[in-house]
Length: 99
Image 1 (cartoon, rainbow, N blue to C red):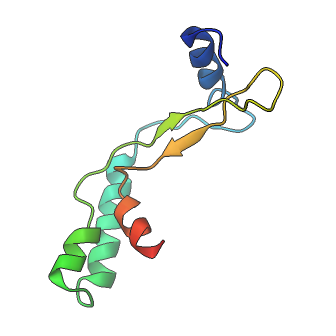
Image 2 (image 1 turned 60 degrees about the horizontal axis):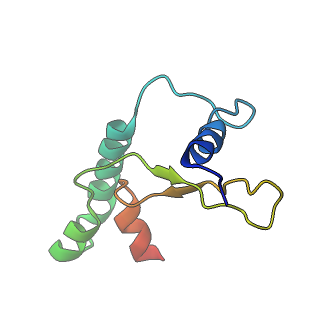
């Protein structure tokens, strides 16, 4: 689908560099979001969940989402379809429980 890995990387880098759709952030705020979310979970759920349920949804670490892009084979030039993997993010475990 992609002629080389280099072509794939160039197409994937072009997606977040499109300033009409994305804005560059000045600093990484993953730890700030983690701290706020931990406080939210503690304030709203500590008293109503069992200890095991609370530990299951309380985030202890967080990682930045990873983007990958399988090709859109039905489109001319097979552009990548950007997808974010949220596994490891601060809100992943609670989101799975609400699924």
